[in-house]
Image (cartoon, rainbow over all chains, first blue to last red):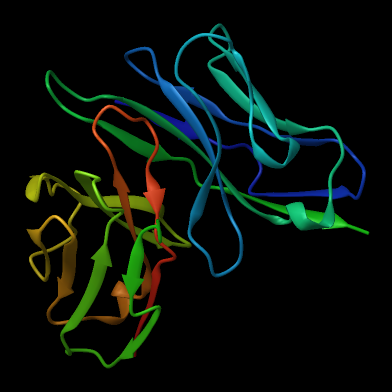
Length: 117
Length: 113
């Protein structure tokens, strides 16, 4: 079974400060990992993903995340927060649930990011 | 492409009424997913289809919930009868075989009074 834990349901940072949103996962097979962002009253938008290859992945809006297998982590970072980054962020893991099954997403509980002026 | 389209965006109904949520996936995508988002339970997968066939409906909470996909460009999620605890945001997402990313619609915010 796969699961995702996001530490901190609410994170506040000052504009210009480092953003760090934490995500740990469990998976029985090599996982695919995703970060999605949800702006108010909107659907989820893909920020970035890791499938194979380079463990540091870059996404949209200056975000990046590093897959650390030894720590089972996929933390999201951004060097300098903007007011427009205020949103809810979801980490998700995808693995194969059985022979011939499609990869499905399991989401974390989300982290609400507030950016203070 | 217009992306995943959901309707209505907001639905307010009274307990006991039938509710039908609609989704149009991205053209050419052969997987379609229905999710429910609540404060208490977060994002939950309800059911998904592949080539219009329901593959896994283990997330559907009760028999009051049903989903259909009569063709590749349309799916419905029906709740009959609706209850206040069904109040949530319902998302539809689609994906193409061989790709990793699911694309989400804007969601339907359902309020059952």
